[in-house]
Length: 112
Length: 113
Image (cartoon, rainbow over all chains, first blue to last red; front, side, top):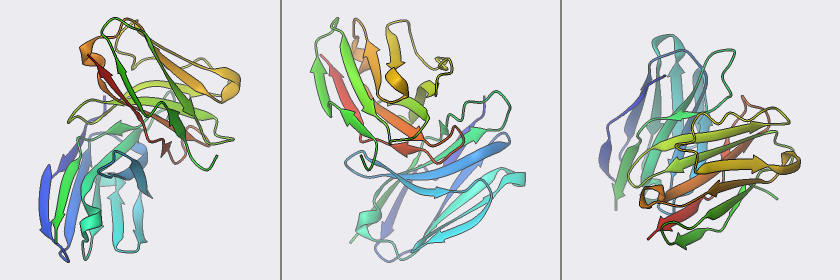
C-alpha cells in the first residue's frame, strides 16, 4: 500500500519562530489533507490540498503531486500551535474508497 | 448537528466484555469512516460506509470487530470479547462524498482493563 512519511518526527520552537513540516508519499494521490491534533485529541482540518498552494492566516501548504510531497508552513508560531500535525492521503485508483492513509505525525511544541 | 459527534467520549471496560461505540455523522454526508489511534501511533483505517453500498471492512483487525450503519446515518462500531490491545481512541469521520474533505469527530477513548 501507499507509504506516508512525515518529518521531522518532533519539533520544538520558540514562540514567534517559523517552521516547515514535510510529508512524502509513495504513490499518486487524489486527496491530501493536513490535520492538527490538539492536546485534547481533536483532529482539526487545516488544508485539503491534493495539489498547489493554499494559505490560511499564519499557515500555508504546498503540494507538488508530481514529486509526491507536501509541505506545511507555520509562521510566527504561537503556543496554541502545539500538538501533532498529521498528513493523510487518499491513494489514486478506481477501486479506492476515499479512505485516508495517515503518516505518523510531527509533534510540535511551541515554548513561550 | 454542526459536526460529527461520537458517544461515549470515554469507556472503561473489563477484558472479555462487549462494547458499542456510536457515531453521528454530519447531516447529508454519504461517506462514513472509522479509524483507530493507539497510544503514540498514527491513525489506522478500520471500515468505510458509502450510502447503501457494501461497506469496505478491509481494515478491521479481527472478527471481533463489526460495524453497521443504519438508514445511511448513524453508525455503531461493536467490539466483542474486548482485549487489552483494543485500548485506543476510536475516531469517526464523514464526508459529503467519498473524495470529499473528511471531518472527524472527537473520538471515543476506550480502555480495556
